[in-house]
Amino acid sequence: MQQATAKPNHRAAKTAALVVLPFAVVLLSLFFGRYPLPWRDVLAAIFTPARVSDAALVTVRQLRVPRAVAAAFVGASLAVSGAAFQSVFRNPLVNSGILGVSNGAGFGACVAIVCFGGGASTYVFSFLFAVLAVVLSAFAGRISKTTTTITLILGGTIVSAFFSAMVSIMKYVADPYSQLPTITFWLMGSFASINYSHLTALIPMTAGMLAIVISRWRLNALSMGEKEAATLGVDVRRWQCIVVGGATLCTASAVCICGTIGWVGLVIPHIARMLLGNNNRTLIPASISLGACFLVLMDLLARSLTGAELPIGILCALVGTPFFVYLLKKTKGGVWR
Image (cartoon, rainbow, N blue to C red; front, top):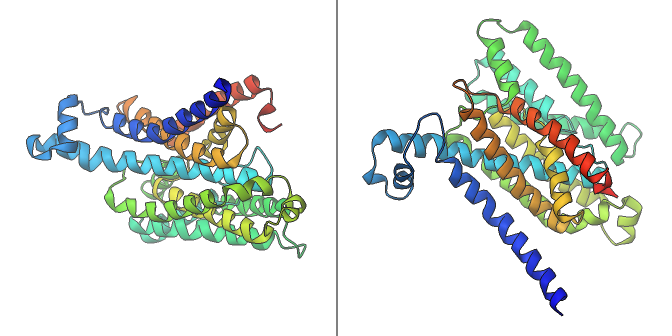
């Protein structure tokens, strides 16, 4: 009896920790930055803004809060998209950009910067071309008249390569003194320009995450294979479309406001599996929580390590690569067995 009650208590403690952790990390990130502030001023700026200086108020409320919230949602979106794609495609090396979303968004941003001078058009065009990339991947996957997970992955690879070439063309024709640096910096990923107007992207991100959360027990069936899922009574095509659509919405919305950020959708789901196992009923919420925490911490490092802010895409790759090697060594590849 004691062991039986210990397991539910242990699971409840993990669940509570995963719920509280993102909020704690976001709050913690507000206390740090290149502009030093006493912790009392930070708390006053959050809870009693009338009692704090204008400089502290602007730093905390106008700069750090929207940036931390955006980083949390982007991290959660990329991580849960990666977890969903890995289950649908039954491939541990799949990430959130598998269907060409990142390269499509990159090309859209390049078009906006070169043709329209950037600004708000960058976010609109990057989102539209990210969605277009997934649509093209689906069409490319139907060359054999029947779409399977393998043909869809191949379609995504084809579309990713195409948009990667188009990005190179846009960089070649861009003005090397003004447009090319903007394109290069955007492709590296950054939250430096985030403000409250960008938080409208949280709406499609939330919708996409909800679609994946609702589908999480069907993901368990889909991860066993299409025939097995159909045997269990799952409408395979319908739920594949819901999951892929939700993951696409998450990734496209995330990429359009901060640029290309890799490794989050690959590494974080594996960390969640190492902690909680392969069951998507717990894996999906855990990926959301851990992804949010990871990217908020990476953004905190990006804006605090040096005087000039580091692109977060580079920092995620530098941290994610050795950690992934460590993870493979620790689990001996057994996370997916």
